[in-house]
Image (tube, rainbow over all chains, first blue to last red; front, side, top):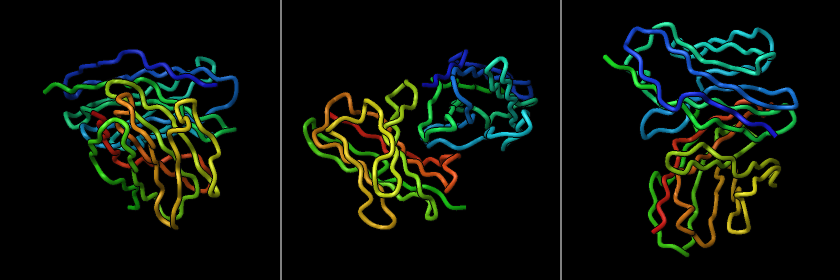
Amino acid sequence: AQSVTQLGSHVSVSEGALVLLRCNYSSSVSVYLFWYVQYPNQGLQLLLKYLSGSTLVKGINGFEAEFNKSQTSFHLRKPSVHISDTAEYFCAVRSNTGNQFYFGTGTSLTVIP
Amino acid sequence: EPEVTQTPSHQVTQMGQEVILRCVPISNHLYFYWYRQILGQKVEFLVSFYNNEISEKSEIFDDQFSVERPDGSNFTLKIRSTKLEDSAMYFCASSDQLGETQYFGPGTRLLVL
C-alpha cells in the first residue's frame, strides 16, 4: 500500500515570496504523483502530475514540482505566489498497478498581502 | 473544457434515510471513482468502477454503499441507511482510457442529522 505525508498543515507566506510545499510518499512499487488544489467551497483541481520522463514537472498557475526517487519526494513550489493561490493543496500518489489514489492530509496555504 | 459535474451540491438527510449522490463523468472517460472527505481530514478513496463493475473498493465501502451506472452518462453512489459519520464531502472523479489522471467534480456536501 502507499502512503503520503505532507509536512506542514498550514503555511503562510507573503505575496511575491517563494513557497515550497512538501510531499513524501512511501511505496514498494513505482508510482504516479499528483498535486491537486482545492479552492474554498470548490472541488479538486489538478495542478500537475508526474507519470514518467523529466523529473521537473511544470503545472498550471506557475507551479512546478520535482520528483526525487531516492528521497521519495514530490515537493511543490512556486517562485512568486499571489493572493489568489490561497487554497488547500493535496499531494496524491497512485501505483502503476491500481487505480486508487492515496491523498495526503493537505497543506493550507495562505498568501498574505 | 469538459468537466465532471455532481448533484446536488448540498444534501441534508436524517439518520437512517437513503441518499443517492449523482455524478456525470467526462463523456469519453471509462473509469469512475468516488472519494469522500470528512471535514478537516484527508480525501479518502471509496470505490472505483470500470466496465460496469467495481474494480477496487476500500474498507470504508461496506454493504451500506453501492454504485451504479444506470445509463450512459450518470454514475451514482447510494448510501442505504445513513449514519452520522457519513457526513462528509463526496467527490466523484473520472479518468481517461489510460486511467492515469483523475478529474474531480465539485463535490456533494452531505450532512446527516
